[in-house]
Image 1 (cartoon, rainbow, N blue to C red):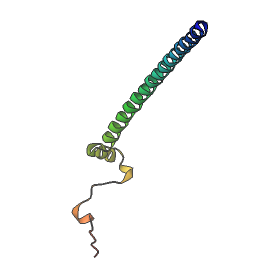
Image 2 (cartoon, rainbow, N blue to C red):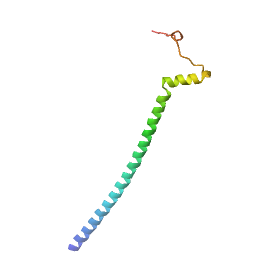
Image 3 (cartoon, helix red, strand yellow):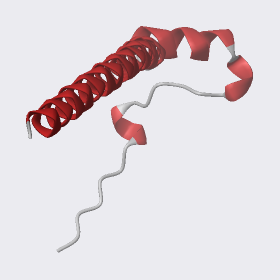
Image 4 (cartoon, rainbow, N blue to C red):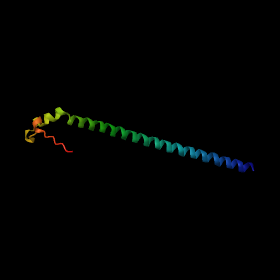
Length: 90
């Protein structure tokens, strides 16, 4: 009987040790995957910041005035009050 109990304990302890090793391996892989995702998220965040800055720069009023002055063939000009027609509908 003691032999069966000893064999059973050895099997249980070796199974628990194997499960512990497997769980450690899974944790290590998931931790590395989290690092990869974090790096990708930082890259996307930095790219988004650059794009927002570029959009803000391109839509700045002074930038638009500079573009209009640099390209007279576009035939763009500022509107005056007489150029604007307001139509009200009820």
